[in-house]
Length: 133
Length: 202
Image (cartoon, rainbow over the protein chains, first blue to last red):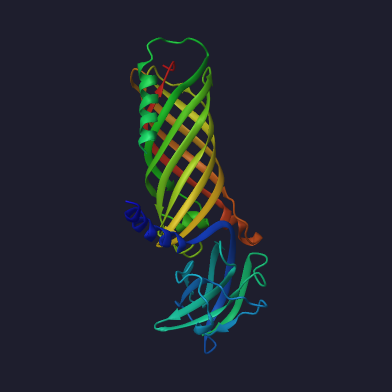
């Protein structure tokens, strides 16, 4: 009986561990513009992911995919750039990390930009500037 | 869930089966209401309003704890689920469960021999639980509810009830000052139909 109970509860234990929790008590506004050959890139998909990387400053730059340590592979926020290539979205506070990356996708091509962290989101607002895709 | 239904039935039975009229102006636990309806109707331009669809069904209940003459105070609660229609500012989730509790104050005014109007004010403390796969988001808000019920007596102490409520909510969220209004101000309408059981009204 004990073994059956233990076997039954074990999957639940792992399920609870993998839950990605957010609190709505803080929200960071993220804005920016995506350009391709200096032309605004419209309808590009924008995703934001929590990560475990430790940035040392607030500079926003392109990051190699292999350098990103994902906290979760499920994006917290998803949007698309408008006709002028602008992106605008907000993210709630992740309970485990305060560092995020932005993924821009167009067709099969995608690139990562970061990091959004306490260095550049102190007033709950980050302007990513022009992101060259 | 069983306990909630049992408590609702006990309160209903108590209020329906009271045998003696009490002419006292003061009463305790003298009115109970449960309704079903729509919520998140005509939401304002806000993060919550633009992110979510209208909700149906929305379950609400109200229990008066104390009344003096036509004035009542008590507690109310509601529950509904809203589907996400835009993930842009709210986040990448499928649906949001909304649970509201709080006190209320009301006043009833008979308009015919068999019907009455009951406007009320409520404080609404709301918890929002959003889900998508293994991702969860919890948020809170404080709100003021302005509502009015039309109640028509259908026998004994039972009234069929139609109601409208406008909720003015402020999310408990810190964000950039330029975005505070859009992120935090969340107002919407709800409409309901159901039953009220009250002693000593009409």
